[in-house]
Length: 243
View 1 (cartoon, rainbow, N blue to C red):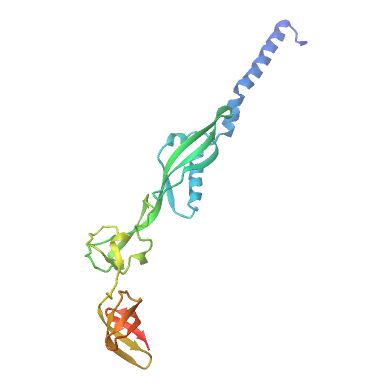
View 2 (view 1 turned 90 degrees about the vertical axis):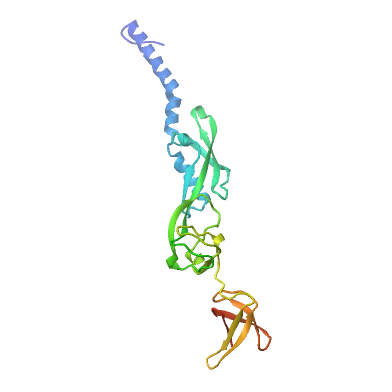
């Protein structure tokens, strides 16, 4: 290499800085490239991935059970998948394929619990077994639940006009297991059969062959004719039949 600098010392100094400069680029270039490709939104990526599994329509929150310190690191996530699909209680595990320095690939496992926002219905005051639940008897609360089972009534219509299977204190949460339909007609009960139209109304005694609640169609036996007919439960002990 021919040097045109003014002195030999100047030429030697130039070559020293030239070699040092390229050595510096070679040494630190991988770190510079890695820093550019890193991201720090790993947690939001996992949350988005899990939400898609639930259709992104349900109001859910996600709690991470391990690896919280890893989620705060700057990582290049190449792929997210389920190592264990969420079960009925919302427990699952995600696997992250992460690219580290110099292109090295590492798998990280993050366990999580999905909590769903639900409405629960709570008794305001104590009620006895067999009591019919009215709107004034309950209050509605929103809570986050880990349990994905259907032990809690979904709608207020699933609670109103139901009866309790046992005594319950005020503040108790209503579950499907303590509720039953309010059957105002019991099997074998003596009832009034009312057959009517716009001009005529006929009443007779009957015996219920089914149990039923208001609006149900059930079978009854006419005790006068000993015939089996069907009618609609219209009230306590009253079955209506169209003429």
